Amino acid sequence: IGGHGDQISSGLCFGDSGGPTFFEGTDIVVAVHAFVFNLNCMGVSNHYRVDITTS
Image 1 (cartoon, rainbow, N blue to C red):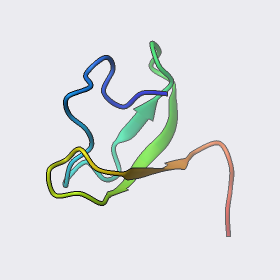
Image 2: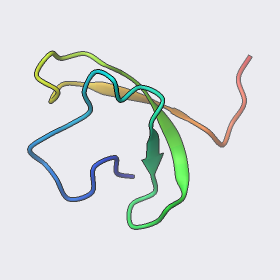
Image 3: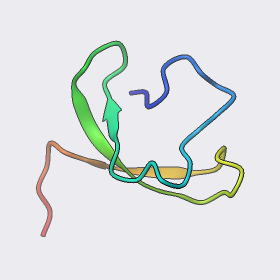
Image 4: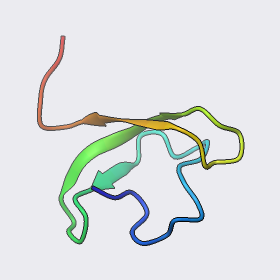
């Protein structure tokens, strides 16, 4: 699963929330970006899967 392809010098940043996470090499959306913990946009981020339901 990849949000940025082969780029390893960057990560999710503020404003990316709600954006898609694609199954690597495809246009299949498997999750949406939820949040990022680091101000330099290279910190821990979280995604929510779109193939399951929660209540």
